[in-house]
Image (cartoon, rainbow, N blue to C red):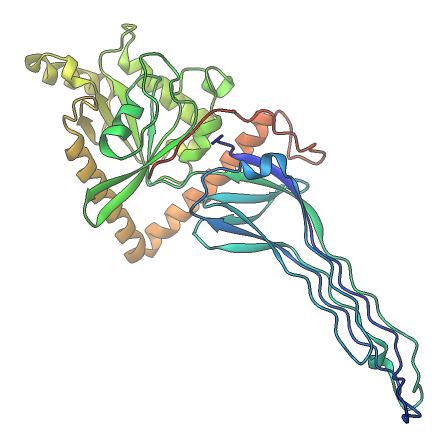
Length: 392
């Protein structure tokens, strides 16, 4: 299945049915009077979040969706049938944007959450409504109103509690394979990961969280180097970031400079994302002789001036992974509890997320090389056509 995280579609709601002009004509009824019925309502268009979907591939080729029109009214005061609504399923985490105004119409972050994006037209009125003592044979009706039509831009951001970031070949995919059932591609060359991968990490039987692995970043990614920063937006909804570092890079580069380069790219992409809580994970420590680990890792942390949590692991052997998983689970639960009990903290977190969403949208627009779209042709050929398998 191809991973598509952007799509543009057109939705057209149905027109309401027209009111009927009719008079009762029946044997032995001399003055039957008007009996025209009302028209039925046109179908509306809804978007509904579905946790069974993880890509917008369904909307890459089918881009126009129309609801049926309502049926017209009939004699004997019969109302026309209303058209059924059209429900379009999208992945959880889909943001719906009006490309003409750049207005965020809805953000579907829960399974089953839905929003009406085009309202169907109202049914017209038959001539029965216009009879009176002075107008006993009205020939006036009201036609059904047209349904709404609009263009929509759909943007998907995966929902995860923990996000992994780091240089290519830092061991992010190996880590998510080690702690979850996800099976992203792992190889000994850069940019093995081309799209985000999700994995459900179980700390124990009833405690779990979702981890997201995105393609590696390199210096200059904000200007388009490597795979650029396109997939960084998938970290916008994480609660915590893990900065995975290869302590002994094969190219003999300096891990400290790599960390600083990634931090710089985060700052360029979104200052709010750079403010997110970030833990340092020193990976591949199994390659360091036991008597030198403390010295080498301590020197690296000291040169960085890192003040946050630091963990030493080997994703390949599993060393230190359990400790990291339990620490992450406890931190996530504490964060959730604090948000429930401390209104000020919850408000601050909500404000940070709102800033982050706005900065991500601005960055996405800048990546397209133009201001908010007003004449978007709907072409999304810049999507990466790569294979992805999600195994939560």
